[in-house]
Length: 100
Image 1: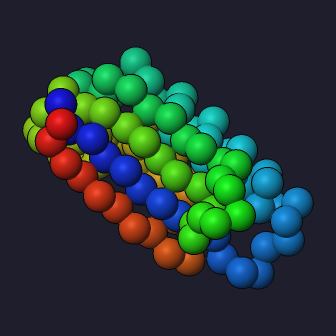
Image 2: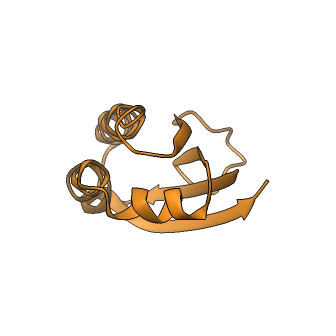
């Protein structure tokens, strides 16, 4: 299995209410990919981190193998969510992929 973790920090220009709506849209969009992407085993977006967190939200996803992760990154359904619900609102993106 390959685990794919991303932490995003949203742009400073958004109010807390706007950030709440943006996070909900990202969560809905990405979790909605389950069953649509070959090799995607699990996907979850956490939007309520502790005050000690350095990011605003986190993606935790599991893939059958590295090829499935590569396929996910270019899959049209994922690209649509990334381009419309994630990238326009994000200031910082950090990722970590590993074999478990």
